[in-house]
Image (cartoon, rainbow, N blue to C red; front, side, top):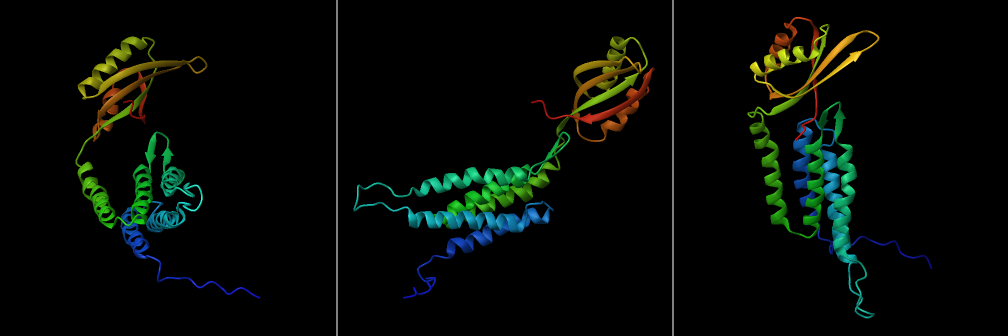
Length: 238
């Protein structure tokens, strides 16, 4: 005899965790979408709902075999650990490196958060999930405005091409110019192209972000024997 088609039993299913995942995960995703990030509304909602669903089903599956030897058939806690570990691959895909600049770290952190949010919602802790989502939205909005008021220290390389033979005296002269402009010289390197006879000095510098760079390069380029001076960003050494 043909088996009857199984009818979903929605009455016994608690839909509140999934609805919360849709709303709270969507709130984080909407903020990322608003700022034009590649992982936006849909990605965050899907991650949050998926994590919630997996925790919900693991709780139903994770039962103790009392009739047998009393062993745990499936440990629900392992599902949460697997979600947190596996979501790292998706978060890493949002981090973009362009030269010495990194973008997408905040979005990767948001994806990791909504995965954890799904775990919390799957355990039906709605108060903690709501409070945590509010805190994250506060960080993404208010803290973003506060960071705009901070002038951080940036680290750069100043590449100087010159035709003078006394590289040491020239390096000392340029270092004095840089210090007078508020720059801190961390290290100096030099090089010579034996074919073209081009001489190069590389200054590793820390300085406050702002409008210093054009003024500094103009001051360095005014030194006798300098043919070019240009900046390159470097990663934070600290």
